[in-house]
Length: 215
Image (tube, rainbow, N blue to C red; front, side, top):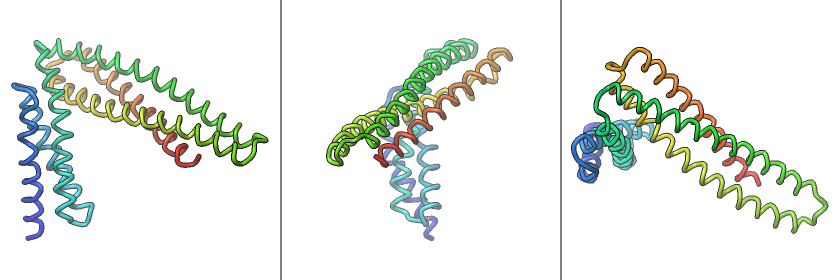
């Protein structure tokens, strides 16, 4: 009985969110947004229900949030799909886009790594200095503000990249069957490179979170 009631609750939350999703564009954009909403909502709601001790309220909230997140990804998939004339055009456009995104993310990660190194040096310099404890605290507080700002920017960048990769993978899944063998291999390689850079960014975010908490 509780399981049935939980599914009804999750379904109700998704039903409330779906109309909002349906407003996000037309044609394929709308179709993919609604599909993403339903898949994301059911998946998130069910997982939350099981993992959080079968709590219906938590499941309902997770379902609604999952619906909205899925709708965002679905909408982006639909918008990009509408621009493609055929599978070959989709494959080559996505390959070029993934390559461009990966290059941009590589540059960002390189700069972020340098920033993290500089922050560590600055923190160590302050702690090892002959300044009074009050002056050290003041300087460390200023450094923490800089680190916190960088952490927020990196977190936002990671969220954007996660959505973009989800869209890119959906595009591959949609068109890979009709793509040429050569395009498919290159497409897979570009997705793997993009994913690798995302993991590097995730590592930087973890480092900045720890640094912010420890200053």
